Length: 238
Image (cartoon, rainbow, N blue to C red; front, top):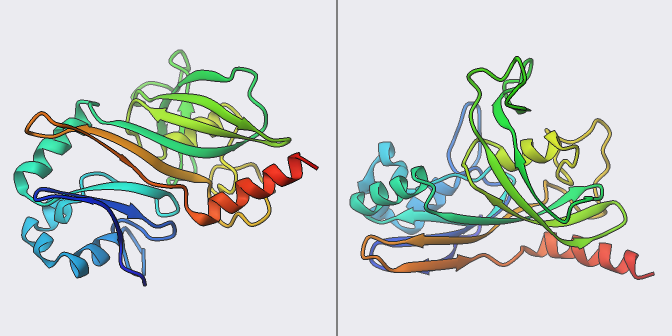
């Protein structure tokens, strides 16, 4: 497997460009090389942070999601950045391709999330007044339509909370599941030509470091997703 692409590095911080199809950590029966494995191979000193600090990996992305991933090089930086995420002080933006057409070109998805009954792999959305909503967790997702196609919409997503599968579950909740999402998509849902995974990419991160400096990081859209968009554009223009 190719080495991890590094978007940024200084004495205390790494920003990794996570490839799709690679889990961040081994979970359950997960097999194969993980981002953590690749990180330790390229940066052996990360082992000093220990497994309990996830070798410095501050947050997670789903296995089939690509994009920017923060890695702390020191215990202090790791703990500081974790607190920033917990306090919702980290600005995150994703690019995704959702199914269907959006009447509102900007909006907010505000639905509580909890484990889906009958499928522990999934999260399910609940309205606050739903009788089953008790004990479910707050989740807030902002979206903006960037480009429209006959059966899809390219969105910029800004999650204001960091729940498991939040973007995927919220888009499914409003009946616009991600293109290529086999877990949350409709039964028999077709994907655009050439798309072999969920179209979800962590494109942007903005953080404030311990010294008060603000940093912004961007991960360019991977070639596989760029090709899908170009194909949709070509079809739209015929």
